[in-house]
Image (cartoon, rainbow, N blue to C red; front, top):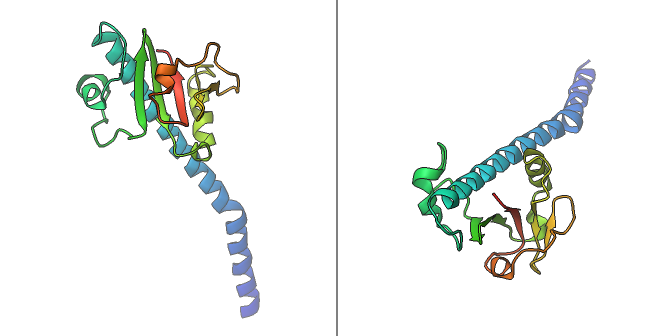
Length: 163
């Protein structure tokens, strides 16, 4: 009888290991990616608002410290901004990006959620190490990214173009 009970518990642990834990890990990863995407979009909204209101001409970059007091809805402070986030603006077009260590470190689930949250925009994509921009739909952006923007950004990066 003790052998039967031990076999039952071993079977339960095997089932848990094979079915329940991977599903929980997938849910957890999805929630983390969703929060990251929401935070990035909030950062982008703050940058767009800053350049729309605080700047007469949209050229250059805004330091994150200048954005904090007025342009981010609750919850953002100097410690909560991801150091990989950055922005540039040229001739009225805002470029918001998140730099990654390598193309392999760009989390695909994060990109998919950003793509969904932005309604499948072609203005979301990758800036590769050569400075070429490919949208999340794997199509190159017509006209590309201006060299002055591309040269100023650490690559590879996930980027959103426009406001």
